[in-house]
Length: 372
Image (cartoon, rainbow, N blue to C red; front, side, top):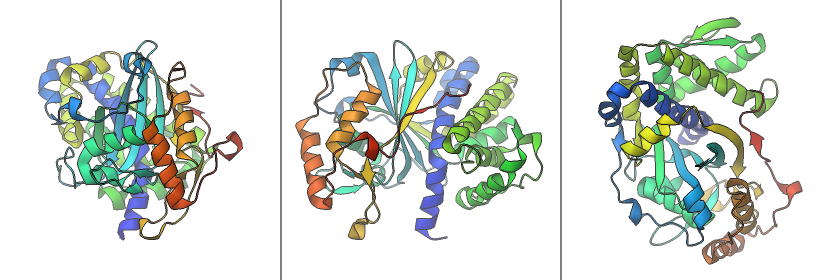
């Protein structure tokens, strides 16, 4: 398979896998207290000094005190390589999770992997944001988000794309009610998935409530072209998460330990054990709220050797709206001179300067928990 085709297929897996694995980390830690210290050490722990990570000068006290902002990355790696290092993989899924420490509400921003931003490197260059992780590992990826979007991200979690599938298989599968009109799309997704992950699986040939293996359940969660598009896809994702939680709650410690042995080596993070335990303790208090894609208003030109990119139209306006979405109470925020400079530079390079307006926005906030 060509690299471009593989990358396209990998991208489709990313967002679902990252979100569900983050939920599952909290689940496993929350229900496996006996194993806490032992299990957390199975993850790839990044000991990089967080104080050395560059954050934006525009970060306000409200952002620092009221919110915890974490970067979630999904990468496609092989043979349990060290995901804390540069040159290992591109981040085909990039999600900014903003947690309100008081209300426990969580908002999510999916940064398009092809978003055209300035890399946080000694010699800055404009590239697809997916390249930042490869160029400088998770530190460069976080600093690129901070630099272009006026953020203060110093914490991250990275997962390998096989992690969800392996977790469900270790649980012995999950029970899902598959509808007749979902079968074709599910099996199409499954075929693509097998090419990406290398994990073989039979197809799903009949409708009704049944036990799906990891590959089948992941393919089910990815169904988009049936029913009400992304709205129903998020419902399927929640169905898979709920099924995993119920299965884990009724599993013995031996099964939980098998899950840990399977998926934790496929997770890298610089969150401390204390932070992870704190997050896990509140896992059922969190409420997933709205989610959007960034940049909201964009154009998709092809820029020579840089390929087809997603250009913010323009960056300054998009960043303003991003902060209004993530931190609605933060009235003190004003875009930094750095964001203004990068916005002007991108406009100069691409010729795209349209101001953000609601009618040009390609995506409006979507309620993650609608329909529950």
